[in-house]
Length: 464
Image 1 (cartoon, helix red, strand yellow):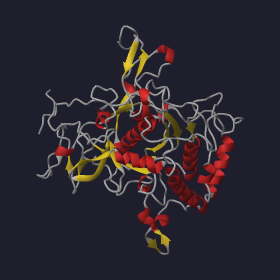
Image 2 (cartoon, rainbow, N blue to C red):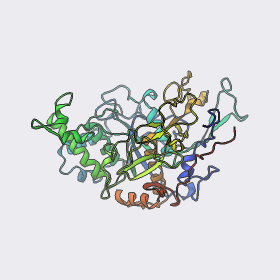
Image 3 (cartoon, rainbow, N blue to C red):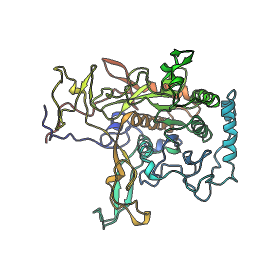
Image 4 (cartoon, rainbow, N blue to C red):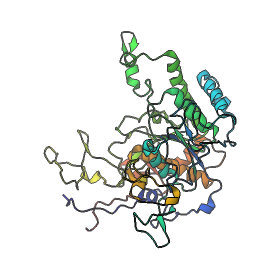
């Protein structure tokens, strides 16, 4: 047992060093921002984002940010008075909804909503994009495309450099991309998710990232619907209320729409955080013949995180870890002060556990994962404190966001051709992957230079 007082030194950007996008000196590894042909556009379907965060303000496309949480057909939280969406276009979106009558009707409604003469806020006085609800989305956006920033600070609250500018040297996997937040309810219905994916198509996203699951009653627990009980699927008999036929059809159309869109552009999905077999929906749609990418989580030692699914995934990416104690594996934090030793078997996989997590951007002020008593100041007032601007993050959500930024960087550098479809982009990602360990040949981790994953969390701790 190691003394609990020993603390390892964690590099805040270790996950980017492990993927070969940054050197240990936090400089671009073999690429330069000048090499970017055209910044990639990432459509992020999640909660809202704290768009005024200093590390995110330059990455967020405020004119395209779309909020489907507050009103049925969406509002523009970044444009309280006017909206400029001139680069939106119908394109060939009509072909996507062929044979999907529900999606086709929603596409027509969405296009009418996006017409120039429609107000930015429709059906609501204020989009539901308050920072109070933006913790998850803000962390995801930071991992994808945060930029280093220098911000003015208030000498009344913190000490800082003599020039009055405080550096916030944090960046995402692709600090050159642009992010289009598409905020939805975490308990979204099929109509809302169809609108979110259609909007991602209309803004011509290069990458779509969904760092969460979708609670489709027929696909979240498909095994229940495979059991026939008295002539009906058990899943429907145990549902809290009957599922209308119209909604049943929309759920089915949503699954087909996701697959159709994935043939045009990669759809990167979190695989789940409960060791689910084959991952959660829609990550479990991933297969060789589509562009859906299911992402599992890997800890800093190079072992799959205890909570991550391990079967049927496309790639793994760095994230945090958690303790595990069941018949399959014992994984305990050896530095935990109050560890209960009773019942721990002699064969103990403590060596797999990693205390390293993922650092990402957080909602400044009282909201988010790390709160502060200070409200977020107006820009001219300067930064009061910076502790709440960042947070510990993890799960397959973090891994999924890191892969999304990684693929955005590949697109921006021209390594993924501009005309590449979702399947070709997925093939590029796989070409950059290497097995993490000889005993885990299916656990593939991407690296910008196709190098093996290098653990960032040594077995031996640093000196105290």
